[in-house]
Length: 227
Image 1 (cartoon, rainbow, N blue to C red):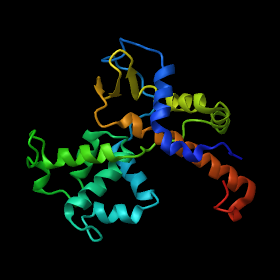
Image 2 (image 1 turned 90 degrees about the vertical axis):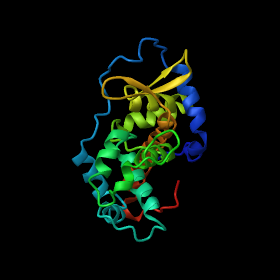
Image 3 (image 1 turned 135 degrees about the horizontal axis):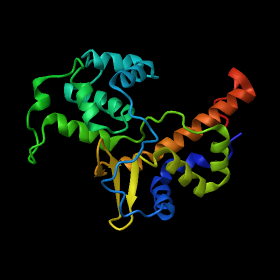
Image 4 (image 1 turned 90 degrees about the horizontal axis):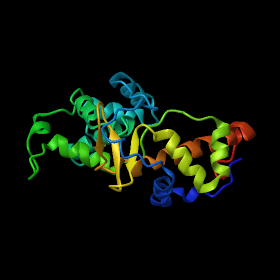
């Protein structure tokens, strides 16, 4: 049973990023060079399939079909749908935009300029949603044994788990003290704090393993209050 104090990890995202920064291997040549991705990008169909199978699939379906009931305005409904897509696409702005255009919420306003810097309403909404994400979808990539080893290793294990999950999706430039995201052909500066939000993927893996072990030990009668 997982009994280490990872309940507080949500409040220590900055510390985990700091640990990763301290142990990551500096590589001044990494920016601009393609790398094989550990996390394959999901296709549009895969993203939609995950969204429709999620815990809040009814809420997604309503938004996808253009139903804004339950939201004070369409703009807030737009942001809610974009947020769901942002998490599943792991902050891929191009894919979020492409998918939103297929939804029932798409309207002319999406392509209208609404910001002093020239950004459209759609661009601003996507950037806001990505920056607001507290976690991104991550498929199972590690075994139960690897998770337990990370837990046993404390903060070093947390950092190693983060590296395992995001080694070729994110990189840190020690000289510039900046995070970069891998796009289709090159690295771009992480201006929306995807690296920080991705810490939640480590948290989610720990929580899922905890729940799996509780169910394995107690079955469907496991006490949900147990930690």
